[in-house]
Length: 168
Length: 349
Image 1: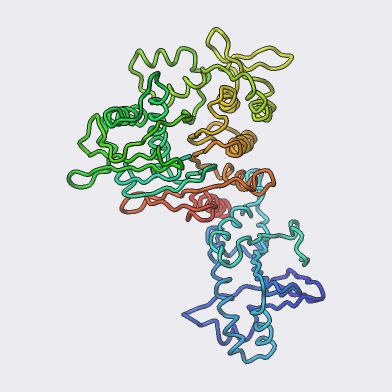
Image 2: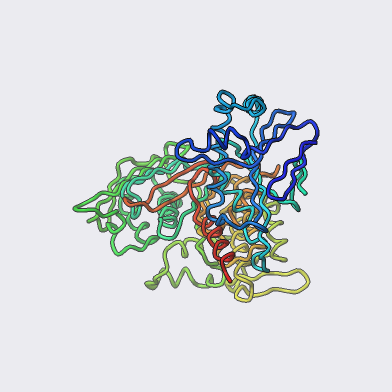
């Protein structure tokens, strides 16, 4: 069962899936990161047997509240865009054969799924039961990523909405 | 059904065209971006046509009638000090131009007026027929409490209320439909009456009451404003104004309503669209927009055709972005503001 750890959260994918921690790829770190003065990377790439490529970005505000909520949707959307651009380059130019193969398989996908895994800040109140409203973030992502995935998801551990992977 | 409206130099709009859905049209924009102007101008043109057609022995449209009546109605509904104030001002004289295209092209009309116009518009394209059905305009507040004698006071004194209040009161005072259409009326009314816990009645004394089964009747001023707004819709359905084709203009339906009632309003608007009413609404409410989005995913309303219009103030005036979905109209201020509020909340000590 492929399992990926991102900042203390473990993503467990079904056995027949392939998953990789994209922002650790040597292709990204050594070759693509400096493209156009700085390319960003999403955290996890996962390929389902149905040939859907999932681009998963993780934001855990419980431990790391770095990004301001107003900047969150654009940051995620840019990471998705940069990662999609990197995949073709990785297939052609990656030095690591594993990364090259993974990029090749990703490029054979028939559909794309964008997921923001958003763990809410510990701070909350009656008026802010969830300090960063997932519906608002999702709607902004929809506007920004319509051409990539018209229905991006904003998930958290207590609200996984039936995706085939688990996060612990 | 109104298909499109083209505007040139109208108040905040330098140039804009609106391609409407035959069912649900939602206008979104910050304050001062012309949402109400748009609704009111479109309403005025439709209302003039219906009012003229309703007159006994009404002949076909003529330029002489329309050039005065359109000017009068725009003055009465938008309440500028003179007609020319509605034309967008730059240096020197400017003309405001408007063209309206309907599915029945015999209703099409083009007209214009200048910044110096006082009481007449120029007709470029004359419609060949009048509109059959009176459009309905619901202002941001309910009208049932002010209904008694409002029309006669309005007609006999100068009041600073715009004419939509009068027009809508006239429609509210029409007798309820009887006969074969009653069954359709009941179907549309039952979900609204469920929310109101009763029925709306116009008493012989000229006042509206909410009749609650087992509890008698309650005078409208004692009924919550939110419920009164729904009661207006109920009344307009039972009188036939919002039944079987027609036009509803509803400015900020969410005003004075709590989210529980906004949910019901969204449902009612969808039901009206489905029954053949062309709805034009302007809103600031993210909650209402989301209710629409949720309802549009349901089996009952999946086929409702929608059009969203985003109005945005730029350097040269207001620009319009339109599309079938709320994601097609550019940035939505209320979304950005909500995230901005999260920023501020998270940075509070």
